[in-house]
Image 1 (cartoon, rainbow, N blue to C red):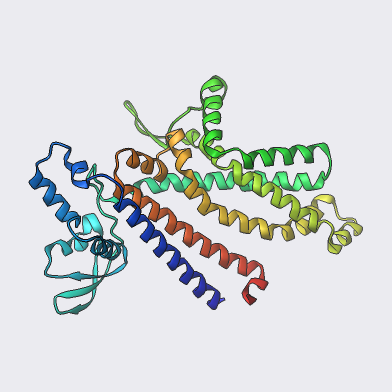
Image 2 (cartoon, rainbow, N blue to C red; image 1 turned 60 degrees about the horizontal axis):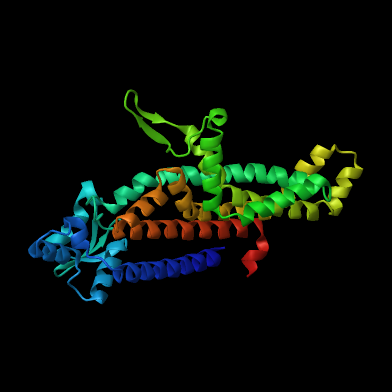
Length: 358
């Protein structure tokens, strides 16, 4: 198990490093002057040069990348005589840095990853993303709970009704759920349930978890979670239905299930205690793996439904060419994706001992 964990962490580090390299060079070569984006197109040349110098844009691209990697790394080397290096000890903006080793004019510092500042608001990118992250996490978890609960129930029912009309109907609907793009489903669902049938559903086309009312102040709107969570959960629901159905059909043919039936146990006890428990291993693994995909796939859903999260923040930043926010959001989502995949692999190794032998 320890060897498996070390291998997964090493591969996760390589993936993260690859994402950092791609993100940096992709957004570095994109057109646009960061200083002009901050100061406006009428800014004087002296102010533009000062901003570009602060951002390191006057340096060769290789040195810019080393500075970017140094900012992102939890362990970095800083020049203690350089006033700019003290930003890592600004507790209000960047958190507390811990000096580990001092050598000459440089020091090895342990700190929180520094993602830079927004071109538009000059606010810390980390603060912007951490403010939006709970909304994305709530949306992803809610959609996963919805997909897992109804996916397992429909999958078990479909297996028990094998080759019946409701089994065929469930399979047709699940295939349709996997085939329809999420952004198209989101537009249709928002229009139908939030506009056409609004008088019956009471749901809105757009809305976030928290909304500001001019009379009562901040209000918690749980009903705004229903449509985006349902839309985001359609695809994992369809996958879980088919996976549960195929796993249940395989388990129902096992000898121990036939023995349980021969003992006169009720059908409910046979299905729940004997069949379903042994059929859930691949389903649990699939459910765990979907969390990272839902975090990454919430971008269009959040934008369509006006849900405040990392996805909506990213799209808004793209519209205003606020590249530090976009780069930070991509890195944050990829980091969580890697961590979740490592945890899923460990969970799968615990459920299936054969994985440890590989």
